[in-house]
Image (cartoon, rainbow over all chains, first blue to last red; front, side):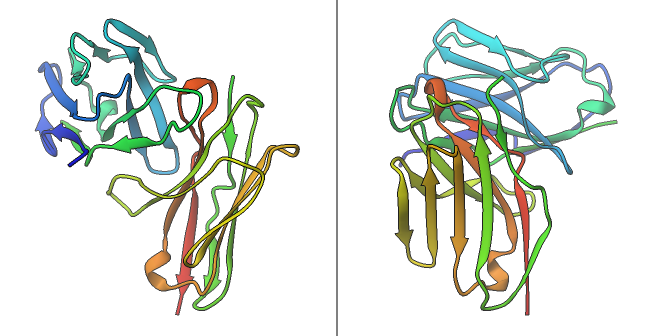
Length: 114
Length: 109
């Protein structure tokens, strides 16, 4: 089954404690992206990756890191989480091409930083 | 900056009515367009895709694309309370998808 898998689904952590949210896709997609979603603000892109070892900042990259060492995985790293990073996070992947760029989403990770 | 614009709503319609959701995009190079439905706290799910000018129908949903006007719309016929959700418009420009902020739809009995 084609899918994007995020873990964990729910996470409560304390300010400053490093954490990683994993994202894995099994569709051999070149493109992967992280979004955060806050009430009234829609999906805001944090980072994206066009292929292995190629990453770029989205609209709200401050406080986040990513890596793309393998095509299937795109972890999101919060080196020193702060309460303003409390949000609902989504990972997505897409075939990178001129035609169909339908995005597939993970189930979401609800992060609370206290 | 490539953008997809949507009215945030909420759009409120009575049960059984037609809900009309609209979207404009800035990237003339976009070749694919998508509508996603998102229930609160859940991930977006694709409900319609459209690639050429005109209408595309799938059940109660019709997507409309006008590339000259850079305009995409979604019509939901016979709206049901279960259609109440946020609807995200996305364009597939420059090889990667760009999302609008979404329109909240409320279908009241």
